[in-house]
Length: 624
Image (cartoon, rainbow, N blue to C red; front, side, top):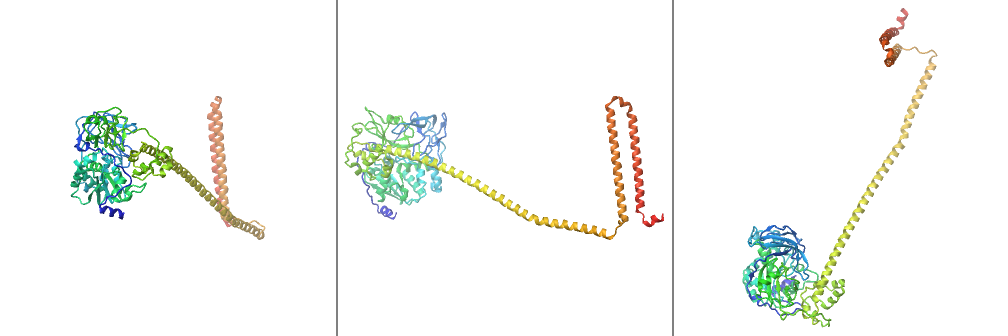
């Protein structure tokens, strides 16, 4: 890192390997002032216009929307939201051809402008330095800002790095032929771009910002130099014209003298790079509360009458732009989205302008002849000489044809920036970049499928681990229960082993009692042969017991007689013939009961007399 700092402070410009010098052909489009394209009859807005996932649609057909209103919802790290370029009505939410070489359809929101161009409520933020950096990131995310240099990576995600940033590089090189959108933007909106650079520097926390411009843009250089004059932390670096000096890794090598290692990102070197168009969009998002709803697009080529750069609302159909520029097609006309090196031919012109659209090129056959038929490779090695990533394009092509994806990985296919320099110099007119793009796509699909398989495997393993864990827990519970039962059985056995000693004690006590009883009996037998006379208390108690027994017997007899009487009454009730005898029987029963009570009373008196006599002393009985 110290070497990088020394190189940057020296102000030198390094070189990168390879590269070419194709015809620039930026005039006359670069000489025309920016114009604003009128709204088309309908605006087609694909939900995904950047690298990453698309947001969730938040509007419905027939709903009226305002300019700048969010049409989709997307959280950080889950894509970017989409906004209405103008006020109008949602005409449809359906599949429309996308801005891609395949022309395949994808989900899009179609808006019919109402001509009012009415804004939603806006909240400008001129004092952004009083706000937290995380809040500014949320604003940039909510505004849907993506990299406008061509890749379309979400800006908020790129800025939300946890690693320290030493240098912020603003890319104004724009090296591809024909394209001059950034050139014109720097000429006319230099101060707005610098404000965006200041916001980016504040968010990243860097102390040094490097603004790089190719030396074939003198007007843009003068305009930006004047705009940064008051800022000591911004330095201008003018790089030589060479394609592809605007590539991220190539420009970093030019400015720092160090190459970004293979399979690493610039942040690993403490560097973040943003495009001048992105800086302008950040300024509008933060300070003006204007989401990304339009961008500068270069309209150029010999088949249009009014080449130049225009402010195009996102969603504007390409055919509407061509009509505005005075398109005069020829036979077998090609319409290229992007430049001649990295762009692609559109299958139809009904596709819309999206966030990554920087140029619409409509060349004549004389101006840019279509590629001829592919011929056999002659192994001249020209492709390897111009490759800025020091790859072996010829070998990569062979491996791509053979679908040897592991070998392509080993040969660093993904270091290829698809600049097209190899195909430009190929004498056999082999579309090398086409093979690389196809192989990359297949490898990405394979990687996604493998990632899905790995995820499924992890879920299966997690399930198996959970089941095994539950099984172990059950076994542990059973083991503890078995131990508890064993301990209980041992305790019961121990108690049982102690039980005989208690029984022995009880047996001894019983034996002792029996022995005492025998001894007492023997003593009585030895003492006298005549029975012992009972004492007065014993006699009295015995008499009371006898009286109680006699009374109980009488009560039982009376109860039995009453029951017998009741049974006889029941029998009489069953026979009508005995109804007349009932009074007499009832009277007899009453008499019998009275006699029984009298007898019982007499017996009680006699018993009481006997008891009283028994209680008298022997002396008194003798006197009587």
